[in-house]
Amino acid sequence: MFSIALISIVLLIRYKPAYKVNIAGEDLGYVNNKEEIESAIDTYINDTQGCVAYINVPERPEYEFKFINNTIETSEEQLLLKVKDDSIITYRMYAIKLNGETKDYVENFEEAENIVASLKDQYSKDIEVDLTIEELYTEEALEVVSIETAKTDIDGVLATKLQEKKAAEAKAKAAKAVSRSYSSRMSGEKVSLGSVTLIKPVNGQITSRFGERSSIRSSAHTGLDIYVPYGTSIKAAAAGTVTCAGYSGSYGNLVIISHGEGVETWYAHCSSINVSVGNTVSQGQGIAAVGSSGNATGPHLHLEVRKDGTILNPQNYVY
Ligand SMILES: [Zn+2]
Image (cartoon, rainbow, N blue to C red):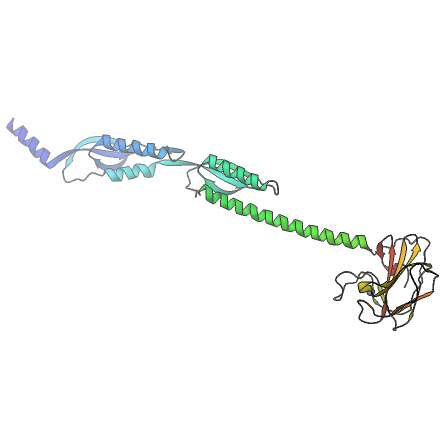
């Protein structure tokens, strides 16, 4: 009896009770208290479950009761680390996609829905907003951003897109406006002048053609310039009635003759005018003298031919 008690005391001094632990056959040392470990594992699972989509701890530890030498240290912390390492976590997140391409990942579906709705509200009247939300499950730790970051990112892309669209529209509008004003006022086409035929008002060298652009003019040339010496007589290109015989801005001294059927001829930069408004003139009649009045750098006749308000190329009819 005494010896058994003595042996027990010696045993308890030299040895302590513990659990030998293994996970899936792997020896992981000893723990003092298996209930404490099991409870710590359960707490870990519960706590993690609240944050991610799913956590799986594939193998729980197995325990074997033993008396071990007092000098052997137990290893609860390492065991818990091993359980955490082995656990498989599936994250649920939401990809916000713009034109089918993921812009950002966020954790909360409602927040994702809110920013998509507000961005659509803001932009869809002006540009196409193809924003979708995709729920995904991944074991990969993708970079999740805050909802504010996601909104700023996507807003930036849409704002740029809108700006580009507006710039393109403004450019197209300006181009259209230019081409419209040009085509409505000038035409290089040879439209019929009806029964009206024209003769050369002066004989000289052509120095600027219809439609030409130059540094002294802000727009295309509306007539034909013919160089002739100062004072040369200008003849009416066809019979008609004088409707303008006076100074007119950049045209200088200007004579306009209406020939009927909507056809007019204009004679600009004259040094003097021999006719008055209302005069009837015959074809070849001297109506004015060549000069450089108005916007002209030297003596020449600026001749225009118009039909129903459209400025035509004089060389389709004369010269
Ligand atoms: Zn001219």
